[in-house]
Image 1 (cartoon, rainbow, N blue to C red):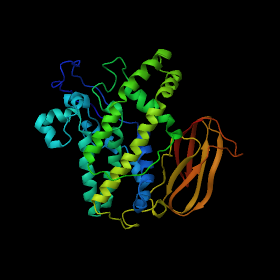
Image 2: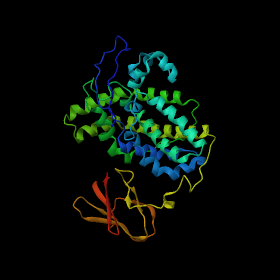
Image 3: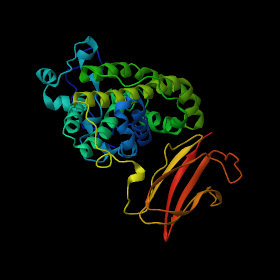
Image 4: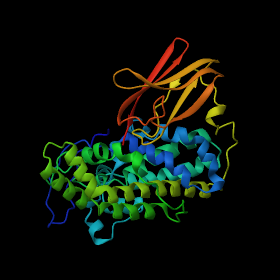
Length: 380
């Protein structure tokens, strides 16, 4: 989670409250939401880009790489309400024009996520045009992260953690505790990727729309906290009742906008197609070098989840599901398999095909002398 640098407060309207400069952590969408968006965005690309489906696993598994790759924290946000020009509708979109108005140190401190998206979209086009697909997939995954961050309203304001409005801690409550457990039940968007004539203008367009949701989030937090000051289940149920439509639309927009950015980069690159089996490969074509049980997706889930695993040598493989008491509730598979990467789907039912209750379950891979375990959350 990137750390926020101290903010420079000059340049505000005189009628705005001048907040004290401070150092606070500003997080980003929970890792589950980042994975969810990257996973589904490939479904909204045109048929000519179906090769993205072969890299879907990579794209969602690397969706949170920007949180660990050493990139500056200011890549993840823009406190757009720092700029008086934002309220006047005269905020420049081009980087050079911004630097004509503000010192670059100020601009970076306030956050530069719109320009990061523009620069990396351009980089993705260059890599695609050169058929440097290994690097292109990493940039595509990273773009998904920053596109998601820039749709999150609390990434767009100086009051990003409610610290100036009495909503302290709202950032994590909203984007992680509230949304994470509900991802599996969200409806997916309708529509498809579209070409953006001007990436930076389009990014600032959706940022302006997302910013308008900040007030609703803070109001919902106040209402929910009045019902449950301890932030228990009653608080989150009240929050979701007030924010479910807003949040669902926001995440749907993120999926479509990410698909549009990938599509725009591809068109600008001349619509290249990778050679399958060289850079873009299917999971079943991979030869792993060690046993791996990957995180299931989605997680939490309802009613089904996909479990992916790899075995490097031919042999017997067993995949079992256990409850929190250590009782085996279902055996997904057991028997001999060639080396490879495999996917199975579990529907949350036991040996008798009876739906299991909501809660935590464990999937265990057993192969030779190796065991691997992951934790899964079934929602109802």
